[in-house]
Image 1 (cartoon, rainbow, N blue to C red):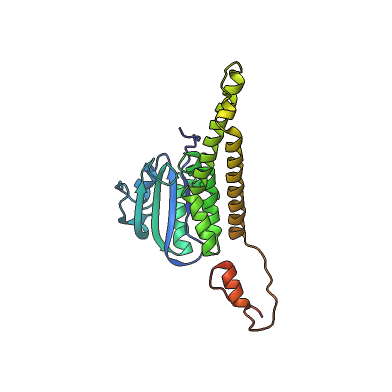
Image 2: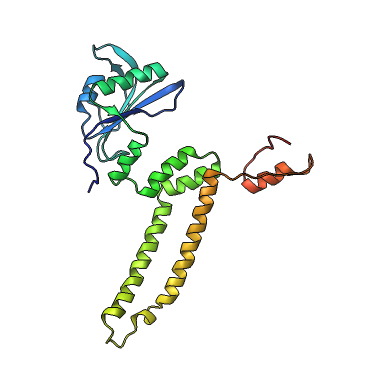
Length: 248
């Protein structure tokens, strides 16, 4: 069941600031009918790239591009989502966005599309954080670490640990609830050994998490040596990528 009752339609420019060949305005909300009718002028087939003009308030053409409609719940946010893919100029994108706001949308807060995906159970908290990590990643290793979390690898490990903890709790509660029984549930199930193995697994997971943070946030390292003694080669071996010494 959804954890949010927000009925607002949100809109934002989804591409980075600046000029480019393509610019995207994205919208999400429970009902996009008025906005689709106002800016496109006709219904859109689900998940079909439609070449169309984007219309202003008086029927004038603001831009021409591609419109994509993703009906709920099969969308990134779990709501109805509309993408207007036009030209990537700041002025034309601003006009398209303002038209969406005039038709009833409000400007999205930073990260609100991903927030709605989390609140609508499309992603969990670890995956929501991985979105920001993936965007901020500056190395291939950082991208790979964030992607593993984004596809749910980290979450699956956490849920597996929780399942094992619940199993251990069952044996311990059975021993407390039925002390008169001849069976020592804790001893018979090797609870102590399972706790030790669980702790080992958790320590490994925490170690990988710390390594992942270093990959994403970086670490300052100084390599000092004479010219042409292999500093670049050593750096490349350490990071596993082709990097150059900026200053020697």
